[in-house]
Amino acid sequence: MSTRVIEVTDLTKKFGNFTAVDHITFDVEEGEIFGFLGANGAGKTTAMQMLCGISMPTAGAGTVAGYDIIRENELIKRNIGYMSQKFSLYEDLRVWENIRLFGGIYGLTDKVIATKTDALLERLNFREERNTMVKYLPLGWKQKLAFSVAIFHEPKIVFLDEPTGGVDPAMRRQFWEMIYEAADQGITVFVTTHYMDEAEYCNRVSIMVDGRIDALDTPAELRRQFNADSMDEVFRQLARKAKRGD
Amino acid sequence: MIEVKDLYKSYAKGKVNALNGITFSVEDGEVFGVIGPDGAGKSSLFRILASLLLPDSGVAVMNGHDVVKDYRKVRQIIGYMPGRFSLYQDLSVEENLTFFATLFNTSIEENYHLIKDIYQQIEPFKKRRAGALSGGMKQKLALSCALIHKPEILILDEPTTGVDPVSRKEFWDMLGRLKEQGITILVSTAYMDEASRCDRIALIREGEFIASDTPQGIIDSYSGILWSVEGDRMSAMLTALRDHSAVKTSFAFGDKIHIAVADGLQAGELKQYLAKKEFSDVRIAPIKPTVEDCFMALTNE
Image: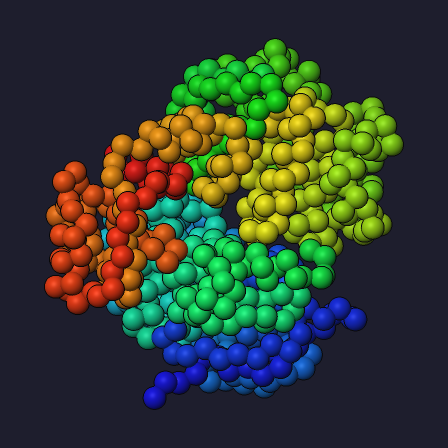
């Protein structure tokens, strides 16, 4: 039997009289790679902030990683992983210092951090970079390290906010292979992207339009429903319906 | 016309080589795209061409004006839109635009026709603080500010990064209309699919142009044999394909896998190999490469 790592009903966020997120309802299963798509301004960031426990919904309810979005948002923060292209590692800290810092923030003991750091650097083939300042790492390495740090505390779910923006095409694909590995280990992956080819790599995809989820299914099923050759075309058909200005 | 010869730029006392000898030229009224990942040197190149950064060596001339010696003149004839949002967050939309117009001794009214197409879309919000605009609106304001002094050359550093596919298409449509007015456009992007919107492109990696041609020319010079493979269990199939000795590279491309294969491999042979590994209903077809295939092939060499 599968368990649900995200389960939300009618989740809504209003800023004054503007409804950024408008009654969204969906579930994400354990170990699933869930793509969260939408045009700029469709409400993705606001929705993600609520799921991560850093923004209180105006209405609606739900759980993330087994904790209540409204009453246990502090526990949610401690039990999820997060990574974005814009911010993930401290450039002026060394590789091991970044791992130590994030491990500490997530409440791991020094001993656990030390053991896991060795294992991680070994697995990534990063042993010789242990003392390298992160700003001197090539971008592709940074991405790998950032993702590994985001799941270092073995969260049930990791949120990836445009993790591959600006990345080399080959690196982008290597990064997705890491996502698959994490999913195979049972970590649920919740990912936003503007690359429509990456939408195909998700088990299921939702597309937000004007604060609502207007489509949610497997990529193949969405292509069939919209009579489209690619996810890019599905996205265009849906985004064209948007009324609210970006 | 933009003429660039042997540009070199390094940082951190020569430890980091941002540009390793870049040479190219852009004709009047041409849209020239510099395409490559973050950290490849795109911003360093553009900042040198905008006269905001000195090269270590090499020459760059913008419509006859040297970016080092004639930097004042260069700044008058170019419009530059930097990668990061560069407007004054605490000024309103209209105040930002007026500010940039004033810097160049002009006014919004005088050159309104140049920006009309783009500015009209944000004009209803002209009293709003720039910092409170959405991503797409900021981008339109930044482009309006770069155009308000009627530049001959437009330099756009990653104008579409972080922008959704639909807004990206709209942005390129806007550039197409600017080109029709005779403006020379130099634009960088990390999105390979934007290559087809340029007259010519250069693929940049680690401070070097690894190829430069029309998008079709880049595609035509792909020398390998490329097939697309479709079926179930795509992620497992990707690994299985890599294990085949006649498959040189194997990359996921949306719902398909693109493989570069050795001369002489038959599709039937590959199907049998996959069938043995319990992949059924496999479809294989020869395909034309995309610019992204070409980029990966060139970086693999």
